[in-house]
Amino acid sequence: MSIPGMPTFGDEWFLLSSTFGAGLVGSWMGVCLYGLTTTQIYIYFLHYPKDSPWLKSLVAFLWCVPSVIIPPKIAK
Image (cartoon, rainbow, N blue to C red; front, side, top):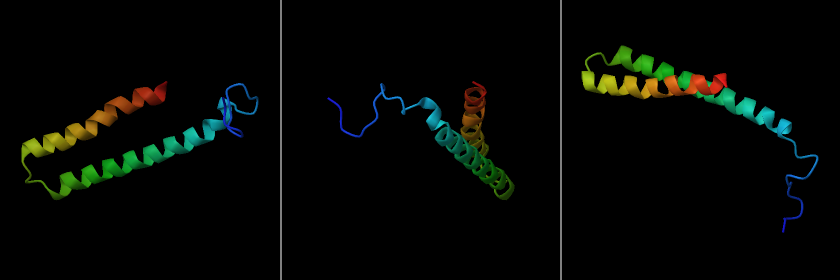
């Protein structure tokens, strides 16, 4: 039973290619947020040089995780 007016997989007008624009905009937003995060980390390291090495290592690790995971996903 389907809901009237909702697209189904059998409809011709419901194409995957019609969602590429949303994926592109989402990718751009993700890149912008990643850039903001990188800028914040850069400013953190400039303004707080006396923080403990453990805290600096934690911040660097938390920045490296998406830096290592995201590029292979983009390359696919």
